[in-house]
Amino acid sequence: MRIKTVLQFGLLVYLIATGLGCTGADPITVDPNSPGVSQLRFVSDLVARFNPDTGQVWIAAPPGWAASETEVRVSVPGDLPRRILSLTDGSFLYRFAGTAESTATVAWIDPGNAKHEETLAVTAPEDTIDRDIASAGLYANRMTASEDVVWVVNSGDDELASYDIETLQPGGMAVSAPQYSNPWEAAFGKGSNGLLTTLFGGVLGFDTATGETVEVDTNYLRPFASPNGVTILGDFGWVTNPNPVSYFPTQFEQGWVSRIELSGDPHVDDEIDTPWFNPQHIISDGTDIYISCSGTIDFVPPDYIATALDAGGILVVDEQNKVLTTYELGVCGPGPMALSPDGMFLYIGSGVSGSLFRIDLQKETVLNDASNPIVLDDFPGTFISFIEVSPTGLMACGSFNTDTIRFVDSLTGEVNPFPFFEPVSIDGGNPDTYYGPQDAVFVTRGGENGLLILTTVISGFHWLPI
Image (tube, rainbow, N blue to C red; front, side):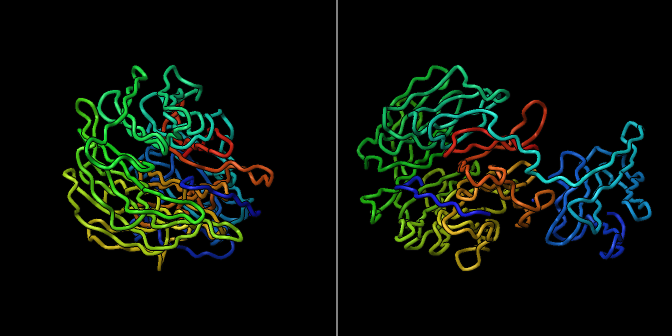
């Protein structure tokens, strides 16, 4: 991949039979009960993908595709047809030694007893991505799916704007923030109410039904200090305060998390200091609150690449703002977070490299930190701009400076799970374009499941069927 660099200022910052060998055209079947074989859950169509690392072509169909435990015939040019059985749920998985130009003919019987036959050619996920399907606002920053709309924080336009989830055209409602306040992230609570953080204008309560806003009162506690992340749980919201005091060199003073009571006029009713500098991202699992503290990050000359200068980690608190535990991750710039669907693993993206960190929440153990990160992208200067997990456990991660989406099985930690053996390129390999993937959501559009991707350098939407 060609070199891309960008200077960031301030805080802008994923069968049946025994294996028959793997040489020549010999097929390789997959035992679905073997450890680590979890790729099938990510398939929503009959697909063939080539894994360049192993020289294997994978063919898979999702549950319900074939009748339960019936014969599936796979024919590969130059080899005898192979017969496998579909699983009890009607899915099937098969692989053989091949190339990116391989083809295979698959014949099966569906649950309605109808016969089917289809010839598949290897395709790559980036072949199916629909780029530039609609425009977002200026410096589109964060995106949330809600029923038939997606809400986008357009930082440059000082607004939280709605877009029709099917057409991605601007909807009938937008929540306006004060001019030049640089809105950063939104969280949605009960009904049409929510909270919007702004880097330079405090925190706003909003109503998406009316567009009305109200400034959150910090009461007798500390005023907001460049508030970043926000989450809502029940009748309370939590906001992170990085508290920067200078840039170039970048310095932070004590950071903290403000708890906001939402009933009545929203106001801060409690706060808690963080054990590391620069708390930015915050999420909830419905019971507890997770805060990632990046530590000090600065843009170091001569290349002005974001660099972590001191340690960071994860703070966990409960609804009463009581500290439950902390996890130190080292000097690595911990950033965006996501949980596996079973709530067992917490993943954290780096704000200074293309790396992930992982915590086993059940065992309260750090599995991957700065000393042994999960490396997704070794390109200098990139960082993980977002992590999004589907209900099936597929985790999409944005590598900002390389314009790519990389995938992980959040249930096993496997990088590049089938069918995403290679990262998906938003720019299509065009060296003259630079999109900057900023956020993504797994949604259904037009009856099709996929990943809706938001980019900020070129503010727009892109669609990847899953």
